[in-house]
Amino acid sequence: MNELCDLKVHINGHHTLHLHQSIMCAFSGRLRTMVKQENKKKASRNEALSIKLGDFPGGAEGFELVARFCYNNGRVLLCPTNLPLLHCAAVFLEMNEEVCACNLLAQAEAFVNGLYYWTWSDVLTAVKSCEPFAAAADASGLLERLISALFSKITAGSPEMPTAAGVGTPNRSSSSCSSSPDTLGFARSSSSTKTPESMRPCAGREWWFDDMTSLSPHTIEKVMRVLGCYGIENKNLILTRFLLHYLRSATRRPPAICKDNGALTGLADTAVHGVALVGGTAFSCRGLFWVLRIVSAVGISRECRHKLERLMGLMLDQATLDDLLVSGDGGGVYDVNLVMRLVRVFVGSEEEAEAPSQRMKKVGRLIDKYLGEISPDHALKVSKFLAVAESLPDSARDCYDGVYRALYIYLESHPALSLEERTALCRCLNYEKLTLEACKDLAKNRRIPPGVAVQALASQQCKLQISKPTAVAARPDPSRTPRRVSRARSSSVDMDGSGGGDEKELLRLNLQRMQSRVVELERACKEMKGQMSKMAKGSKSFSFGGGAACHQTGGRGLPRLC
Image (cartoon, rainbow, N blue to C red; front, side, top):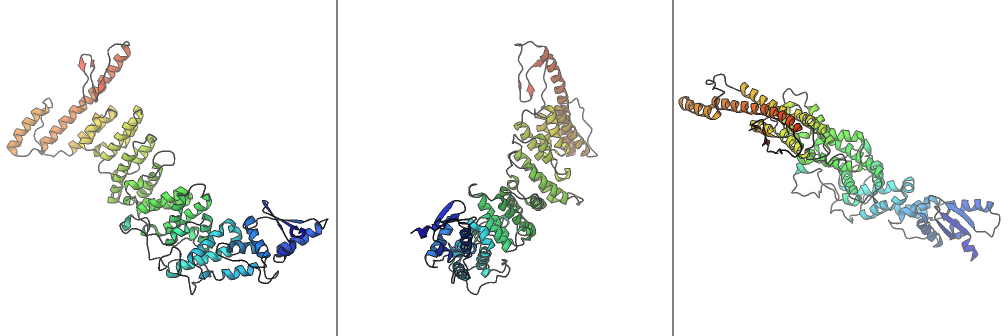
């Protein structure tokens, strides 16, 4: 009985197995060599030998399987689940034909040679079983052979998929795949037929996509390398679509399960290289935004981000407001910097055009909507709002009412802005391209500085004078009220049948009155500030509402804008 315990094997520093030297050394060349070396060092023959095995594939579980093989006189039941473990252990322990006939390595190799007759699920299970000792499986060449067999089944019915170098399509392949369709190939798509083609980020999802998501990022990286499609070498659209599907699945896993961020970043870069190769021919603008959201969740290199954003910027006129609303990275609700970079790319591509194109004007309307959407964000700074509003040339907008609406929302959402900041914000407006209604609203807005309101009204007056026809009726007396002017003009309309010039004249008088009221308002405000500083506490109270003052200053009511 003592001979049964004459060998102690320490596995990876965590487990110790008591074994029989003669039985184990009869199959393992490595153990035989180590035992001979230890026997020379051992002082007493009665002591049990102790040897250490580090980095043993599969740990104690793997060595126990090997011990069972040895104690069972070289017999073991091989299956796709334990094949990778036994094959790597046999290579590690040098259990080859030189040590013993029909040894473990020979049996494992014979089993591997028939892998092309395995089912899809068997090959996938074997590949997944290699992951705990991927380095050993890769060094022995087993992992590459399994991957080649895996994709030989996929490419059996598709000429579009690349195959591993030196691996041809087998003559026979098992048709009993666990999740494959009736016919292997790439013609099938699982996308709903109700979704328009232009709205899909990709053409469809192949039958094997979901099965492959069970593999680790390092295994997928090895798959791409075996196929010669890793990094900038990726020129296959189907593999690009698979990587995007895999990355999206990886982002939905708990962080504790998916820890290989470095490998995921490499896969994301590989996917972006594939997307950049096909560009807008296979991906719509919405599809590119979908790609950006996926790869940004796992991280990509600066070079790949620049490449992807350039593609998106060139197609910005096809984007929608929902596309631009990309979540921010902590500095705000939305990623405003991304939109600014995309606009910069688009404007740069349109600089050579002599006149503003319809694409530019379409982007102008889109950015105005985007400004209105991000304006309520309390983290949005004045400089960032101005940067977005001024990112397009003036020719991109025929009307600035959209910019003013966004400015109105921003001022209401940021009531603590100083006079200087509010004045600076109005810099993004072109008063001459504001409609009369927007200009009136601007003049009545209590958050707009009075000087800006005067400037806007003056611009409207100049616009009316420029558009005034050369032949008009006699100019009415400015001292007359608009109602009298209207009556007088109505009589002339009855006489000559045309009142277009009279309406513009009436409009001009209204604008003059509004301008004079704004000037009077500024003067009254200065007087009130002087008197308020002299008043004692508890004296008369002041009440402001709707832009009008109820307090009487110097026997005169504070004027209203309109």
